[in-house]
Image (cartoon, rainbow, N blue to C red; front, side, top):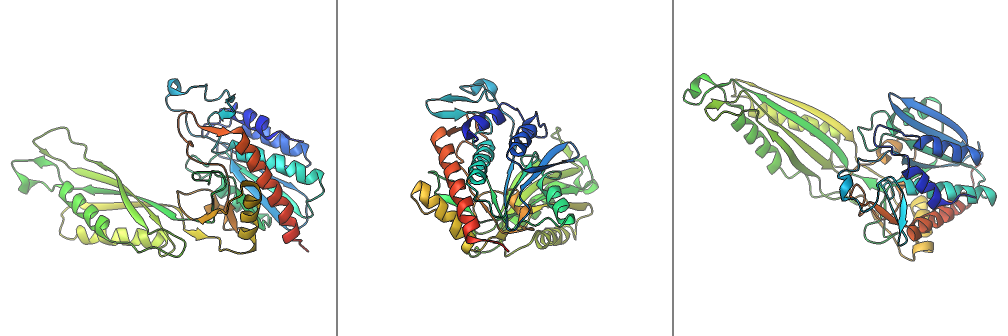
Length: 382
């Protein structure tokens, strides 16, 4: 059997700050191989990834997660060494305790229990990446593409992101809004402030464009989703002098959008607004969009009911089925199968003194155990 808390400690002690692996993936691979999983390492660029499968029959229930973590930040502000994985008054402190090494350990422990009990009548699999906290170009996205090429079938997936809001089990994620970033650069003509007719100031053009974009109401929401929102995240004018009209000004923005939109439609809208604003401007406006993911929803049904029932059995509460929050690697996995996210309370993720109560890690293991057992009862396969 696997001790989920001890495995979490071992994973935390591998300081796998993106893109470093620091041996974390080796720990996961050894653990799963010891349970009889066929393990396939996939390295793309400098990122370590792992796909492991127990069994060959259908259905295939996949667990997805990531071993990489965000930087520590101010190490001196931590009450404990961020990678020492100490338990203080029943609480495990360490970078990755919540997001999300504990979930990997809890599902591995649950898988071990299910295998020993003979409950796995289909297959269990793990899709683990080292690139979720980074740019996410060489992680789950590429693993999913490789699995598609190999005709590997995932029937359903659970992602171990910290989804609980205030208390363990109060929320699971059944979808996410999409995300698009855009960088806007307005190039004019630098000149002396006393001779504006000899210059073309890009700053007013940029500000008017941003106002055009910011004041549009994107939508009133979508069933199960919040309204889409645009946020300006940065404005830059590289000009130190007070008597110089700058030659360039730039800005960045992000839009989190529901299924009323696609990343492509929003990119086209931003470009069209830029074109309209620049029509009478002697300079140029360049828009560079980057679509991080599309909005998606796993509709309520037997799978979401099964996950909610497992939470109810252990935590004694009915979880909210939510689409709130940022993006996750579920946005890539949804191309293969229905996906939900279920994990610990996320209040301290990415913070100094990230921490998870030991009792909640064990509760999460218990939820995963019930989920696995119920899954192969509800989806018996061929």
